[in-house]
Image (cartoon, rainbow, N blue to C red):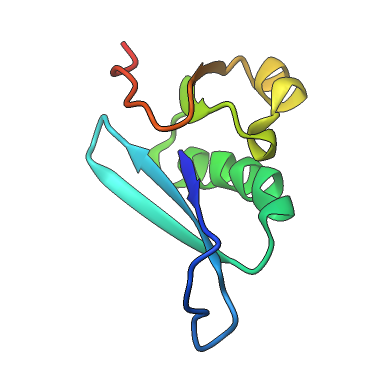
Length: 96
């Protein structure tokens, strides 16, 4: 997962950030357009429900940089999710 922005050019609907979520097991990618960075945690929580519904599976691991928008300790602990973080601007390794 990574958040991008603010973009130099605002979208037609006023979005300046986007959250990218890549599910490496099945090579799916989701992009969520946002006007504010502050709503990212709620999107990730909803995304967990989406994965449960679509794939009858739970998120086992997420990987993010150390951005404040990815402070998800309570969510990860409550759902048994391993949260791996890297330094900003680095490429992580695949969850096993």
